[in-house]
Length: 311
Image 1 (cartoon, rainbow, N blue to C red):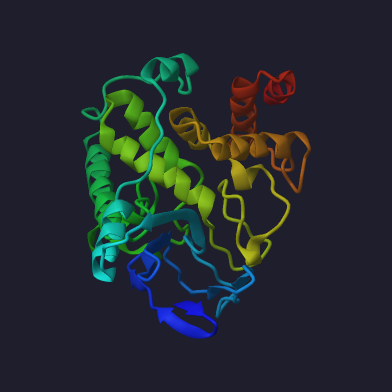
Image 2: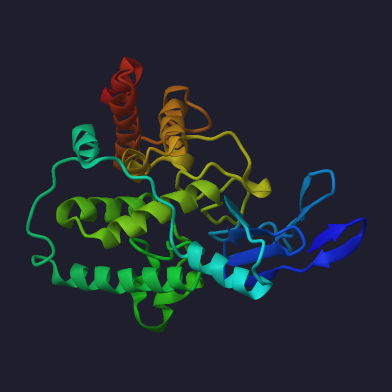
């Protein structure tokens, strides 16, 4: 609601994953996406500009997608009705903002490693899986449900059938390691299909702007690279919070400096050994550490990253 001196001037409108508030007297529309929440938290703005968060009803059990994004739409509309503005906001909300590099600069950046040819004919089962999850992705984006990153490359659709679109069907949420971003990024380089770009861009932005893991315990972190905006999951970061080759793919495509910061945070946490960044020595953790440091070296040419990658 929009208040002035304690009186309600306007009431906003919401749809699945989207909310807008129109001030018809002054001709302004403020709209924003919000993300699916298992246990909704109240978020309010006081008159002095303070943003107030109310605790979740069950703060010890959070699900993927809790939180709100930082993308806002501000539109001036001197002669539009509230209903017209809501439709306008929803329509624009379905079109993710993108800033793309020139093709020559992108090729010169060499963000991807060499990939073998022959996909997808050699793996028809995986091709069918991609077709299903791609359809799920676009259906979710059209419904303004999850910022277009429901389950592409994730575990949710593996069981197929009626549960393929059920966010509760997977105990791992929506960001199991880096598959959500790295899968469409690599498929984009293999076939250059625009649909993979339309999955990668909003997916990367979503995971940088909202909480992207679930936990039964404040110290039990989901492996991903989200920068932990949640009040329940605010802690010193280590590489398992930030890891992701996919975030670098997004950075080279978009030039979004937030992605570069996230990627460097991953490498920095390894070098500085924050939290338990170097405690695990299994092959998966070793690869993650080497990859994060190597990507940071490619982006900065800082020899400290390369030296640690070789370790």
